[in-house]
Length: 371
Image 1 (spheres, rainbow, N blue to C red):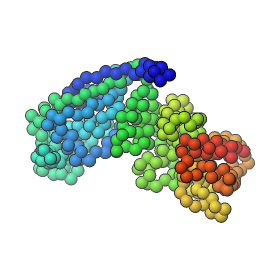
Image 2: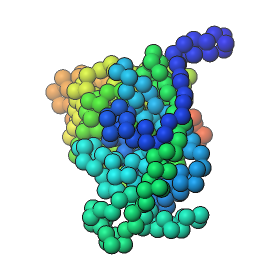
Image 3: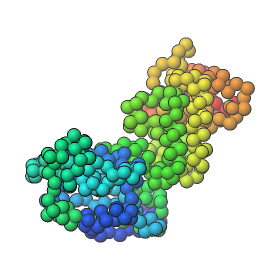
């Protein structure tokens, strides 16, 4: 059986590989033949010391790891792995564009262990860099020989070719990036959503930034910075729309589910499911809608049990609840009664696996909030 699965999966993957000069990759970028999605640049977080060490490695001829690209139907390339390296090179050379198409401020290097004279080195002197805190007179332009050495530096390019399907592209992107220390799971998931359906991604992001959603989920500014609001919105959508049998790891289930939804349901439907559910929760109990009720007051933080059982339970029954004479009163009473149910211990017992908890919470919530 395993051999059959391997053979079947291999049919979906075609690859090629060859060496290219950095100058060739730069030319492709300038001709819009290789794409670094602007939303991916949110993951471009290298410190100047890391950027400087990369340029040092190129100048010293130290081999760099290969980059991975996906070949589109038009023959162009989408960068799948190598964002930090490619963005560092492009930014240093002054050609990296932001999401509006505007050139980002070129970087200025620090000295390194083997090349301490890289301190304040720039590709070309620029008043824009001066505006970033370094006087133009203090900038040291890289000489022509060193510029040519960088352009002639070589990178291995691994190409995921057609007819490899989009799912293969998503899987490869995540597997290559998941081991990194910079991007968290939701940031990688965001990139996968963008690759799959940008309009869907924009709709989910907009819904996750509404006042009702942020207040009910009790999301802080720091959590927003770490994309926690997007993680909650994605989990909500997947639990409401995608059945779970417990066979997949929870994170894989969420990853797989949101890609399928991005290609299955209209963006406006995803937006409405989130915003209408969380407006109802807000009307019913405000910021306490997903917090534990002790009989007289709400306590504690919002946890996954509240999201999976209450928010998802309401989401699954939204249409029928809204047909009631007083939807908010119904939801408020069911929320308060929920926290006293004997089954609650089955959702929170010590050592309970997420795969088991989700099967219990989602199913219970679906039945509990059915009018």
